[in-house]
Length: 79
Image (cartoon, rainbow, N blue to C red; front, side, top):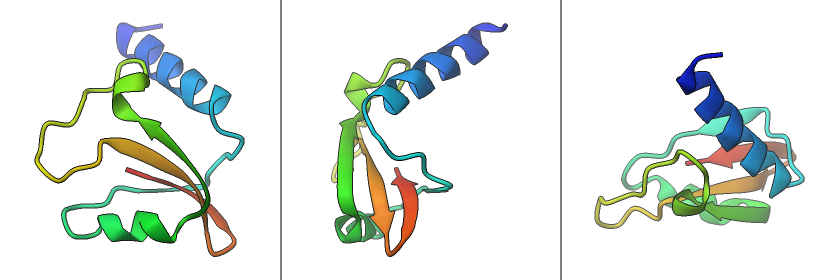
């Protein structure tokens, strides 16, 4: 297993241990689209700084967190 694969596995493990959802869809929201995350119900928020191998956000106005929950009836992960 490469170092990258180990890092990804460690990040995935942390997310799975800290959230009961298993999203089928990931949304990467750009500037101005972050409001969609507010529509997610049953939301779990994980700060990037707490997730192993994630880089902290330095861009002004970016929340720097994963929001995992339901958008309608679909389980999603938003960045």
